[in-house]
Image (cartoon, rainbow, N blue to C red; front, side, top):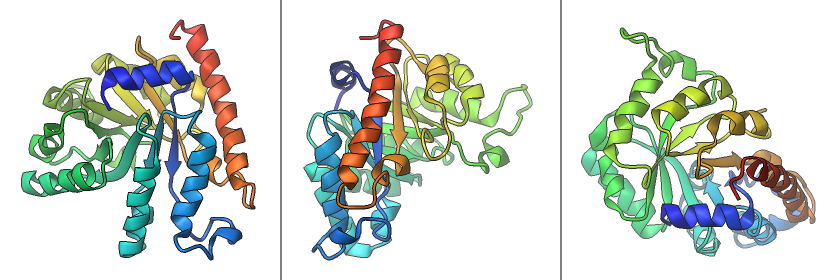
Length: 273
């Protein structure tokens, strides 16, 4: 999916919502567990009831990898089921030297057909560039994450007075363009989003942490919006586990509708529709 199509979808749906498919077989409703592929059946229900409200789905690959070949088949079927006009983000956080990254790119872009992949940039350009060889695919680089441990390295002070995460974002933005690179910026890091937006004014940010992790949508938008919206807000557990019975997909839809309504208001107030 190219940038123009993504922006078109955001404005058409009046939404910049991404649903994280962090599907844990131990948390899905009981009535699905006897199915041949309970994870796919769960995801299918979520997708069917939310696809008109979202612009992206983000399967976290660890939840599928942990179940071996069966889980990876669930991932393949899930990605295949997602409509073509919705961005598919494989949240795999890969990052290794060139030859290995090339194989990761082949796996997620050629075989699984994902549109985007999260990547750790700390091994430098040769760990990122193989992913950028694919036209109309996105590399989503870890910029500033929302976990407590981000303080350990990402926010280390440099000799010039800046922070390590700022230098990583500045340098890595030169690997590609705003048409093929996004950044992960945690929703709980709102104090820093304005600064990151100054470094990469045109790039999209994938923002996890709204919902169960306590991120505030209004604060994120206040600091992170740009002329093309520039934000994809991810919510996972608070949506997919909103209900625990046979109506789980309806409960997920209700949560999506709440967020989409807030997003439509924000887009309207900022003249972005």
